[in-house]
Every structure is written in C-alpha cells, then in structure tokens.
Length: 237
Image 1: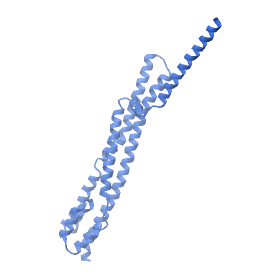
Image 2 (image 1 turned 60 degrees about the vertical axis):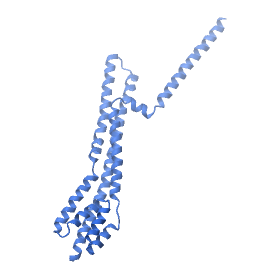
Image 3 (image 1 turned 90 degrees about the vertical axis):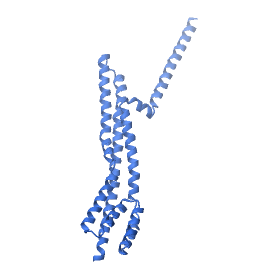
Image 4 (image 1 turned 180 degrees about the vertical axis):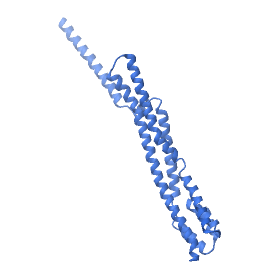
C-alpha cells in the first residue's frame, strides 16, 4: 500500500509540474505573440502625442502629394495655343484659355497677358510675383512636416528616459537588482524611442520627397515664364 501510494503521489506531482509548465508555455506564447496594439499600449502615455504626430504626418503628406501632383500636370498644347493667340492679337481668347485652365502656369501667364503693352520688366516682375504665390501654396504645411520629423524622436526619447527613471526608482524602493525587473520595464520604455524614430523617419522622407516634387514644378514654371517673355519679344525681332 505504501508503495502504491508513493507511486500515485509521484504521478500526481508529475502531472502538476507538467500542468504548470504548460501554463507557463501558454503564457510565454501569449507574450511572444504580442500584437502591434499591445506594443503601443505598453509604451505608455507618451505614445499618444507620437501617434498624433504620425497621423498628422501621413495626412499632410498625402494631401500635399495629390495637390502637387495636380499642379505638376502639364498641357503640351497650352503654350502653343497662347503663342497662336498672341501672334493673332487675340488677347481675350488667350485670357479665357488661362482662366479655364486650372494650373499654376496658366495663372502666371494670365497675369503676364494682362500686363501686355507695359514695359517688359514690369511684365516679368508681375509673373514672378504670381509664381512666388503659387510656390507658397505648394509649400503649404511642409514646415509642419519638417517639425514633426524633428520632434517625434524627441518625444520617443523623453518616454524612454522617463521609463528608465521609473525603473531605477522602483529598484531603489525594492532594494533588489533583478534582471527581470530591469529588462521587463526597459523593453516597454524602448518602444517609445522606436516609435518616435519611425515617425521621424517617415516625416523626414515625406518632407524631402515633396520638396523634390516642388522643385520639378518650379523648374516647369520658370521654363514656361521664359517662353512667354520670349514670345512677347518675337514680333520685335
């Protein structure tokens, strides 16, 4: 009987140990299968402004991207039609064409056509002023995107530093240096640094990408403005 009891006790103990091991494995599996939302939540309150900055950066990028893309489209026949109208002295037709064409270059040429008959220098200056306004509209909110690229990583570092301070404060209260205590809290706080850097990188790339697109539009505007000035000089040659 004693032998049978001992065997039963060993069997029950082994089953209990296996159950605990399985429970630990399930817990570890749950921790290893942590979702992105879980990571964000573990980052703490500092993740709120980082997420807001991310949403703002994405919104500004796509809003500016489509606006600049629309402004960058060109009509190869536009300047040819303007040339024909000017040569035929059809000023009203040229103005109507500019007003019906929703492009920055059309608004620049429209201002130049309205100044026909005045000194060439004055026409150039009026076109240049309109061009500056058009570029200003293209660059709208780009400064905000640049600011996000700079401050998002700072928010991340603030969250990490605050978390590290909290960890060492807890260690001083517990009077116990435990790897689990340090690592468990530190990896959660490093999430804010990673998130801040990612948002900063996205905003940085978006900022420079949009600037490259704007530069191409500016070159197109300058080229068409020069063609228009040359067009006004053609009859005098």
